[in-house]
Structure formats: C-alpha cells, structure tokens
Image (cartoon, rainbow over all chains, first blue to last red; front, side):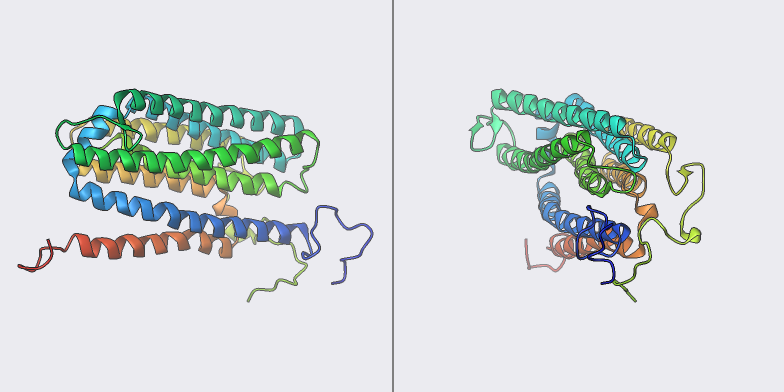
Length: 218
Length: 123
C-alpha cells in the first residue's frame, strides 16, 4: 500500500482504499447489494399479494374502490416523484460543489418526504374512522368481508413498511443536511449524498408499484 | 478480472465508448434540464396510469398498470440512479435482484395457476 501513510492523503479516504473513486465504487456496489435484498424483502410480499388477488378478485376490487383514497394516493405519488427530482438535483449540486443549493434541495426533500407521511397518516386516520383496519378496528361486515380483511391487511403491511423506509430515509437525510451545512462535502467528495440518493429512489420505486396495485384495483 | 489494488480511477471515468452522449448528458453527468425532463415524463405516466384505470379495460388494466409502473421504474433507475454511468459490476447487481424476483414469482405461479389442471388433484 504505497500511499496509506502519506501525509497529504485525503481525510475522507478510508484506509482500505487506494483512491476516492475506488471507495465510491465500493460504496455504490454495497448499496446496490443492499437494495437487492430489499427487492427480495418486498418481493415476497408482492408475490403473496398477487396470489391472494388472484384468489379473491371481487373483495380486492371492492375494498380498493370503496376504502382507498385514489386522489390522496395520486397526490402522494406526485409528492414522492417530486422528492426524487429534488434528490437527483441535490446529487447534481453536490457533484458540482454547490453547497448552498445542496442544503436547500435537501431541505425541500425533507419537506416533501414529511408531506408524504402526513398525507399517509391522514389516510390511515380516515380508514380508522371507517373501521377497516384489521385487528385494530375492523367493523366492515358487508359482502366479501373476509376478502376485504385480507386486502386491507396487505394494504397496511405494504404501506406501513414503505412508510418505515421513508422515516429511516428522512432521518438519514437530516444527517446529510447537517453535514452539508457544515461543509463536509465537495466536488471531490460527495459519495454519501449519491449513495443515500440510491436508497431514496429505490423507496420511490416501491411506491410506484404500490400505488396502482393498491389504489387502482380494477 | 477484478483488480482491487488498481490505483486507476474507477466509477465515473469509464471508457468514452460506454458513456452515452446525447441531449441529456453534460460532461459525463446528467444535466439539470434532463432531470426535469425525466420528472415531467414520470408525472405524465402517473396521469396516464390514473386515466387508464378509469377506462374499464377489464383484465387488461392490470397489465397496463404494471407496464406503466415498470417504465417509470426504468426511468428512475437509468437516469436518477445513474445506472447509465455505472460500472458493469454495479449494473449486474442492479438487474440480479430482478432475476431472483422472477424465480420467486415464476415458481410460485407455476404452482398456483396450474392447480386443478389435472382432474382430481389440488383445488
């Protein structure tokens, strides 16, 4: 290791890497491996959803049409796509060493992510009052009650786990915002922003599939 | 052959041939205008998926919804997640998950969809 004890070594370069580019590549690959495990995590749930939708088409259609708020779901999809744009622009700002712009874009991302969770919480509240939350408050006893119960269970499991991912993402973005504010990043070192961006876009992609599968069952 | 000891720059400094040069590209990275363009395309597809859901297409509607979602995901992966600039190794990992997912769903449905095909078995 010719450079490891060199006095001018970049302070952001961890001991086990030779160059920042190599470090960035390893970090990027690591995040993609993690995302692959996330695909399997959500993939199992999506598969279970597909099996039950195939077996209970009427109940799924009825529950989706009656109890899911298509308008709020559409608005939330737009909000999340907007946050993906602000993240993409934040990575761009970081790449070009624009500290102030980076801080602003991360703040916008936090606002959009927070708005998404607030809208989701509002939907959950409405569903509580309608009595369609399995185990917690389920008072529906109309046609296909069993199937409605199964659909709502999938809805809360999938959107709940997605919201948990959002919450973790927002906490990490807050850390990134503080680091960006303190000037930790530069055009030469911005890998944490870029790798966090990968995670955020992935959570967005999960929602891109959840929205039509839950809100638009026909 | 992977050479982790290499001091040669990796990642963004790909050979020129593998970097697409088009209107969306600006000095080996995506331009700001391109990010906005992709965003508007995603919003358009969102509008389309909501519209299509109201067209009473029956069994086709699920297929259309999934096709649109797949297209949106592809745009996000390719442009926002920078896979178009990523190394071959990273690209491999980004599609590997889909291969496992196809196995999971393919084998599951080869069971569920074929039940009852042979009279007197299954449900």
